[in-house]
Length: 468
Ligand code: GLU
Image 1 (cartoon, helix red, strand yellow):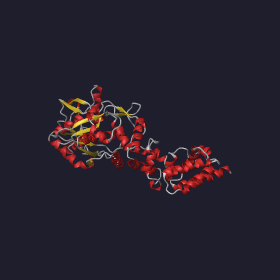
Image 2 (cartoon, protein in one colour; image 1 turned 90 degrees about the vertical axis):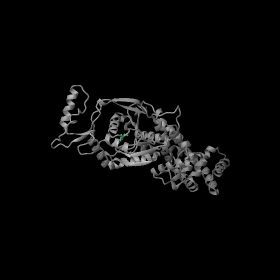
Image 3 (cartoon, protein in one colour; image 1 turned 90 degrees about the horizontal axis):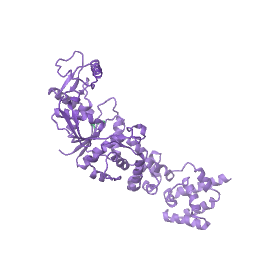
Image 4 (cartoon, protein in one colour; image 1 turned 45 degrees about the vertical axis):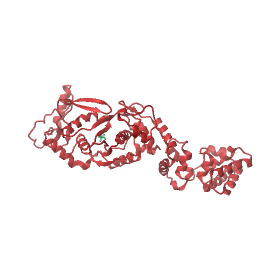
């Protein structure tokens, strides 16, 4: 059978960092082995599953570029199939109806606790043949009771479970709806999943799932359980630690490439290499290299990776993401320079694309006001002749090109016997409102002719007003 992995999120929240890492490792495993990757939405918990979460998961997967070959499948569409399998297990005697009431289960539990035993279902309905008047039964899976179940885990190695430790878990509730362990097993079987890669919070379910598969005469997939992700303080990652949803990272200005590179290093390594292209990851990924111990997130490293990718990826590619961020702050990118040109002049100056968008507003629309200090220092009446000479020079220019613009700035300095800074800095403040921008010629190119002339005039007026 050819390799097939799956990502099986429950749509009860956003796609968070932990889920995205699970998805990535499953995806990499499939791609590395030339297999298929399936997306399965485990939405059987009708109360907690929401359409918004489903959409957030699909959006997150697509933004990260984790494409799937089959799906998305929805478990809620498989109810008839689950019912059929439950019946099959009942018919074969691998499952039975349990009529125990809540009170009975409660007192069973109390008794076990008092005797210092592990609380578990004691199997009292295993041999019951008669229904109980007025009680809608649940269906329980009959665990083997003796022997062991071995999980040959791809990450953890061999884990041995005593079957006597596994209680007869409920596979259908009294209203007939299937439970998690049953639906997962049926789908993994029907979808020919060969490798299940998931968080290690599921390790204890694995022997149960293997035993159900055995009862169904199906071969169990291989399992790989990924270690937990911790916050920078070493405690279990949670909302307290800041951005945990993948799309929130997008909002904050991260590139998907940086997130993927960051995620893969949460638990996987290849020598001491830190930066991996996606092709490299597909080639190098070996689940045997996944750490057994938990890994902590490291926000500084993510920032570092993000800057690396902003600097080195194709400007056109980065520009698509920048355009989105410009849109987020109310800028229509068609009202100014090509975002790819903005990327080229800004990429060494920004750690995130949100920062880049915010630092590029003046290319697209009027900046709100001058930075107070920058104005006081650079836009004094001494700057008036400079601005006028620049205005004259720019207005006379044919093509609005970097070299020609640079010449105008140089000539203005020579003509007025001023150092370059005394020309460029007032111009910069006039164009951008502050003293921070890319080089003056690049800034001029991107601000464009009309806006440049208008902004010089605006600065001249402002200076006259404030000195009057
Ligand atoms: N739906 C489960 C979850 O989101 C995952 C089940 C599995 O991977 O087997 O935790």
